[in-house]
Length: 110
Image (cartoon, rainbow, N blue to C red):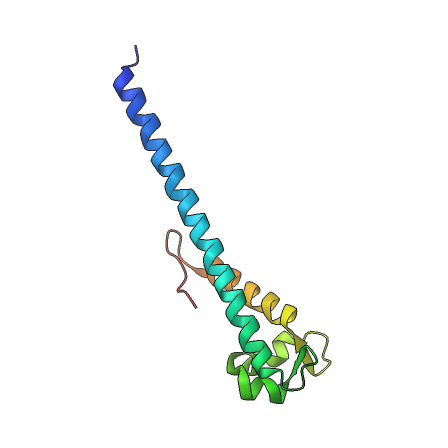
């Protein structure tokens, strides 16, 4: 026969775990929004001609990480990259770091 306090304790523990997971997910969403807002701000500042795309020169002056990886980001080889292309590259890099991280360890924040 199941002890009622034990069952209640397990249910309470499961609820706490669910709340922790929900809180963590909310924090991840908040961090993602902050990263996106910061990237938009930096992109706009680097985009000197306001055309919505960065040349290698614009990236070099305003977004050094993008400049360093410009050829990887510019998959269409047009000599310019959009904010969407930069964001896709950043997601790919985060996914690769996460996949390479040992199980149970998290990749360092960027």
